[in-house]
Amino acid sequence: MYTHQLQTEWLEHWVQYSKVIITDADVNAQTVTLLQLTGLETKNKAMSHHTDAGLMLALCQKLYGKSPEVWLCSIPAYIFEHGEGLSPQTAAYASKAACILLDFLQQG
Image 1 (tube, rainbow, N blue to C red):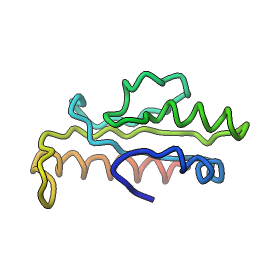
Image 2: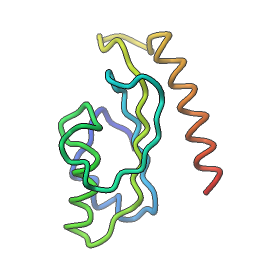
Image 3: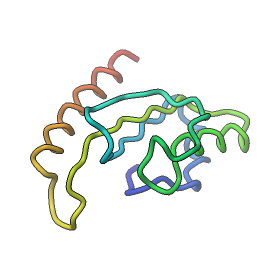
Image 4: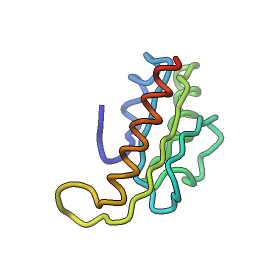
């Protein structure tokens, strides 16, 4: 599933999976990172949107008594104007992120 920001309505879907990977265009990122979240990251540090991934993970655990592994892939982003496509810099980082995620998923 994809959208421009996280929504708490997804929690019922999250508990059906062992892993959830979130990609985020992040103005503060200097390079592509892939970090596992613990549910303690609830101060909107990791995400640039309104509901952060750590809060989603904590709510999943609290409401359903279980939660998947949640991984956050941050991708450096520079231009957020309306338009089509990515900036050349962000496109290069997105390609790098795709390689990192493919390797991650192939490892199990």
